[in-house]
Image 1: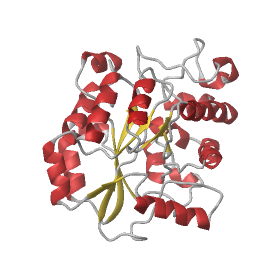
Image 2: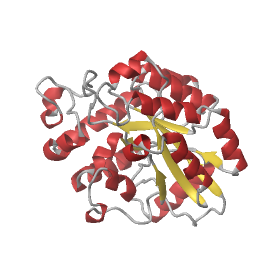
Image 3: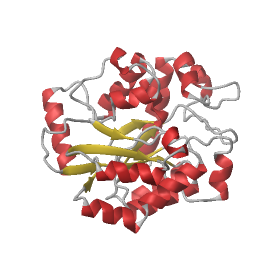
Image 4: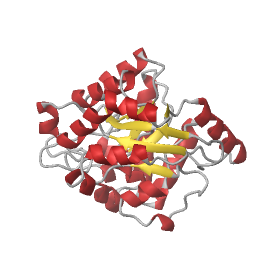
Length: 305
C-alpha cells in the first residue's frame, strides 16, 4: 500500500495527492481535518468516492509560519494548545503536556467534522505518530477506532520512529503491519529519496507492505510553509511527488508484479473481518506476512509525517 499522508495541508499537497491517486502510484491517503485546505481535499473525495482515504488525526502544527487550530474550542482542551489557541509545534510537547481526555475530545471532533460533510473514511492514522508517544494515547487511539468502527494504523515500527521504546507499550503482536517503510532524514540527505524507494520496491518481501509518503508539488506555497524545516520540507515532498507521479514508478511496480491495494481492498477487508471476529475489542491496522498472501502486495497507508 502506497499511502500519502498530510492531505489538506496545502493546495500543493492536495494536488500532488490527487494526481497520484488518479494517474500515479498512490493508492491511499489520509486527511488532516484542522488544516486550511482540508475542505478542498474533502470535496475531491466526495466527488471521487472510489478512492481510499482516512483521517490523519492531528495534534501538532510544526510549521513556523503556518500553525493549526483545533476543531474544538481551545478552552475545552487547554493541554493541547498554546496561549494563542494553536496546537503545540512538536511531538515532545504532546508527550509532556497532553491530557488523554483532551486528546480524545479533540480527535473525536476531528472525525465528527469529517463525517458531517458526508465523508466515509476507511481508517484512522496519526500525524507524526503522536498517538504513539504514551500508552494512554495509544489507548485513546484504539478507543476512537472502536467508537467509529474504523481500523487504525498501529505499529511498533511507527512507535519506534517517535524515539519511544515500543516494547514498553501494550500493542497486539498479531495486529500490526510487519513491513512498514518511511524514508528517514539521513537517507534524504545522503542517498536521496529516489534511491531509497528503488531499493524498497526492488527488495519488497512477499506479503503486505505499507509505504508512507508525503507528496507535494513544487511551489512557493510549500517553500513558505516549510521554511526552516528541511525534515519533510518542500524539497522532500517534491521528491516524493516526482517519484510517485512518474511513469517509471508505475513501470517498476508492474515489472516487479507488485499489486497496489488500499484499506478498501477485499484482501484487507478479509483480514479486518477475521480479526474482528477473533477480537471484538479493537479494530486495528494489520498484519502477518503469511496469513493470507503469497505474492507481493503494496498497501499504501498513511502515517505520520
